[in-house]
Image 1 (cartoon, rainbow, N blue to C red):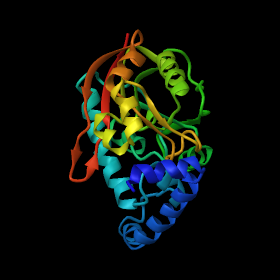
Image 2: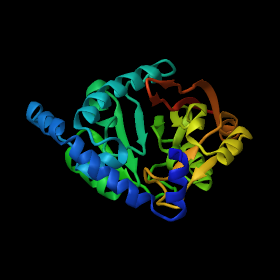
Image 3: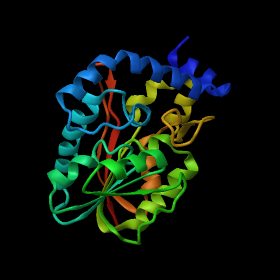
Image 4: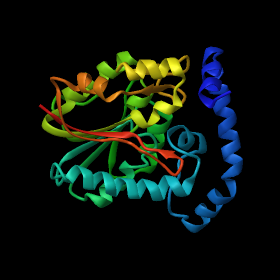
Length: 266
């Protein structure tokens, strides 16, 4: 039986969270030695609690910090293709345990950085340990606490990938509200490269440009998944955001990259 079919059965019987918790325990054992070594090598680097880290990324301290830094640099470079980030207000929407945004104050010394997430434990940890960034909690549904037309740049990495179809529309409307006219947004989605992870009937939905949602678990959690045909996303953005570029994800060395949408509020 394929992995996709196994996951479908687990969803049907409401066992996704239980299965995911077992995976968490296994990864905790597998990565323990390297994580301990990383703490010894970098005693000044604050690392979030294991489950908070696992839920948002992987249970690998080295990856959390090093890839977080390299990804932050790449993200800034991508933004600066379209806008100047100096002295601008930047939002990490769905920031998790600050894997990316924790590096922005050092990389962009004159910018004002914010992070928001629905996970109250994660935001509480960020507020205590991550300096130079203002963090807020949001609900799984909008609104956020921010004023209209507040941000010059917004990014949401693998956030739409864990939302219901209703919340795709809700959050696109909210991002439109809090973004300044002309603001640049970067959002990532499960595009065509993820089609192979779907069972046949979901592939048919995807091929007919419908959003595929795999739920029956907590929305927003890593076990809740959405898959995004590009034509569906174009309709979602229409009238609010111009698409400056779509960098489609690829399958490389066993890893699947998400699509990157570069948008501009119109």
